[in-house]
Image 1: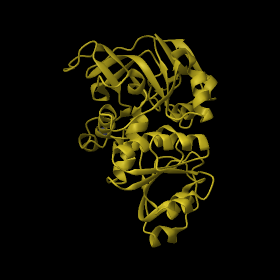
Image 2: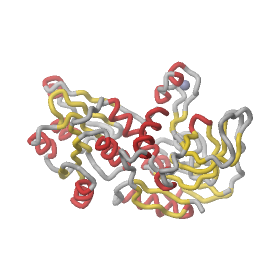
Image 3: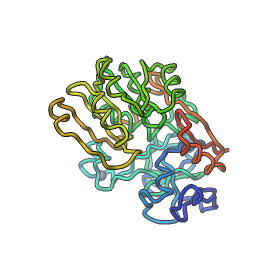
Length: 337
Ligand SMILES: [Zn+2]
């Protein structure tokens, strides 16, 4: 079978399309013949060794959906031909945190495709807990691409305790998690504002139901504050925007942070944190239940996971370059024939 393999971590061109043996499912596992695969910025970072895969060669990719084509020993409840979505949250499955549905706190927590081989392949073997039934209402393009971003966004909104009627500001609307947070928050009854450096993306967000938008490079904190401020700010940009994000939050506001695309270090003016009683909330990936709740909302039409563009499986480098260009608005993925 074909798979996209990294033999070093020198960037996009390090991905090579190679023939590898089909993996066989062990006890408690199923093999999925993938129909669609979703791409994330993580695939770009892993290709650059940030973080480095545990072993090379490495197959990247976190999202995917397909059909069960082999079943391991002792697996009940699955049949050949079942349509499933891959949940990329991997963990030991038996520690107290896993049993409490907090796999993201497990000592063995991993993102599929980051440390361990992922979905950029024709067939993948996964534990049954990671094989989620595909609702009929969801098409293959959405099924294979929504997962990581929507589960991450769902956890951010839940950790920030979003309530219907609250105001949410999503900083940098182009990215996968931001787009997912926008659609999920709207579906959960929030009034959502966005920021972007692209007027076109702001226009598209307003057409999709945003209450308004601001320039990411401008004084969006002041502009948001003049409109009453945000109860929750969804942040994954970091030093380039955090000061404005804190200004945008109401007193007592919650700022959920799941990444820092503009760099890891910021200078924090601490009195702002206590005088305005802000909460800075770290969040990473999602639990299996949060994956399911995001999926439920999308399948019920309460939220969307727009697909910007699908490429052929053989065109991974082109698809990753498109993702890297940040021109997209929604998910980018690959289709396997
Ligand atoms: Zn565990």
